[in-house]
Length: 153
Image (cartoon, rainbow, N blue to C red; front, side, top):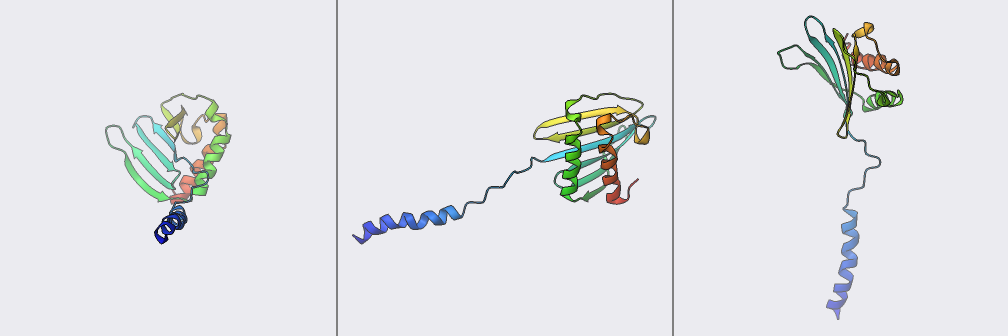
């Protein structure tokens, strides 16, 4: 009789232990994303840009024709600031528009997340760029954020 009782009670004793060892589910996990910005071209073909990851990693790089991408600096930024940039981009309406224009100097903005890629390009770079209307708030915010990480200009 005690063996039968043990067989009935043992599963009841083990079940709560096994359930408590399960990891708690994350609430609303964010799919990783990367915002990419670059500008350049012209006579030298030099292109400089930033890759801003949702993880907080920001990479400033440059690329010259015939050479590999050269990292100028890497910094870890506050993820909430990067989320703020993403929200400005999402609210801009640019995801509903295709912008694919090039010039002697060209600016390219990209967004990658969950296997989807978006890219917009327009003629010019810096203050001379012909920024699409939807991005006129976002681009200065993005550049200010990146420049302030390293007092980069």
